[in-house]
Length: 295
Image 1: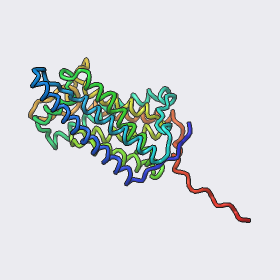
Image 2: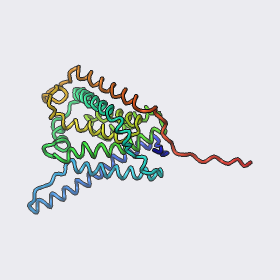
Image 3: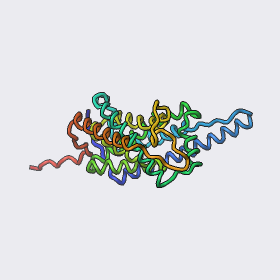
Image 4: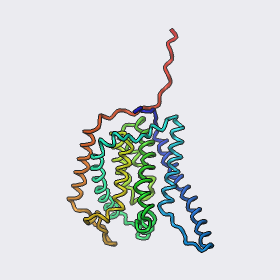
């Protein structure tokens, strides 16, 4: 596969993240306005009101990412091949990525417990957020569509396919992954999602660095998001992991589960490292052709 010359300066990466956030809010406002008018007309006509819920967020995400990615690729005169999913790398490395994803799910669950022990989540905000985004009973189709399909695809295209890919041509890999993860965390605008977003960004970024496969990144992202809405339905319950805690206190996971998360992360990382070739530099934009020797 050709390694198309493409790069982003750190400042441009920050601008792209801010533009993504701004477009999300703008499209969300317009969709909310449309929904309000729709429901007002429905009330006058005697029809029940509509609640698009996660679907409106999915539409906003898709429009924002489609606009930004297309604009950025055209700005750099780069073909869409830059965003190839690389199915071959997916097949070879899905096993280690699955192990990494399982360790990430357990690890961020405990990080979430730690954060909520320091910064309790307001109960009213929790209910409003869950009813809007994660309530399968209220949104049995649009919630999985948003969290398991739309969010992984759009966010990985932008944050790994464009932002991280561009930063890797201008920065050291560790710094590029840290910056892209910090930007990925910041656009969530929700302190209680920060641990999941940041550590998820680190894992997804490292997967992309080793495999250059967006398919693996979005698959890992989808698995982590799916676990958030399906954990309550597991055939087992573990305090601090998928057993709802009392409203007045935080319960931490058993120590053995935390060690299991570390073991899964280490095992997945070692297997992925062994299965992938040494990391090669990403291509930067081609410079001016050298001047011909007048002699």
